[in-house]
Length: 356
Ligand code: SF4
Image (cartoon, rainbow, N blue to C red):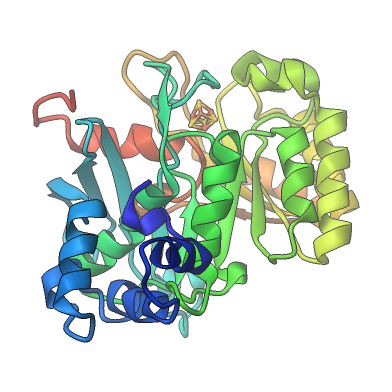
């Protein structure tokens, strides 16, 4: 297990096992997460013999940056190579008064949780090549550290909406969230972390049973089983009624709002009937709805509805008593939904060689 997967307790146990005092764990964590030092030889308050031992047993390998796309005031995508050669991407979304209000200084990272994805949503590029492997907790945490370092600004919001289904990598995700949240780790409040899922009902219940106040977003994209199953195979295993029931439990336990992400796809899920049903689902759970006009992708058959239809859908949802927004700015669509993210950012690399 690599260095950034270790909790404080892991370090204490490992130090004790090699005859070192436990308090060294606190010193190591301070170097790694507060001072952001990634070379053992620079951790000057550790005895040099211990530094040598740690360097040989626990090599630190920060994520290797392959490419970055975008500039400081826009959304930036970072492409990283992992130690086994697999590629992942992370996205940094700058503060956006237009999106979050004038006073917002929210700087968000969108983090990947797997290489590829097994869930095969029909609108998503992440699933096209299937699932390759889960990321380790350290690879998840490292995305935060490297993007903050490369972006040069503090990040204060995390969305697990990058490549992969985060709840399908539940144990590593939870371990990573623990490290990101811990005072000895990154120290970011759980309320500033959102896990976005395609609807893995048992894991939603597990997440709800966790004490941390992690936010939940559901990639819904259909208000009936018939429509949802057309584009999200996961719906066959976990139908809408079960999903909404698990969401209800989550809301009751956490006493917080969840979000429904809904990509608007022409002639598929943009009817007024779907809008009415979507509003009804959301109203019952007091959920917020994010409507995201689909971004057309070469090779996939879907199209975005005309603007007037998008507006009409929004009005119908609002008339149905639900709290809904429609993302109009292209630059921010990137953070909008599980799967659409990768589609969009890959288009921006259209003139560079394939990733692997
Ligand atoms: S939308 Fe999310 S769950 Fe579906 S295939 Fe893409 S990454 Fe996987």
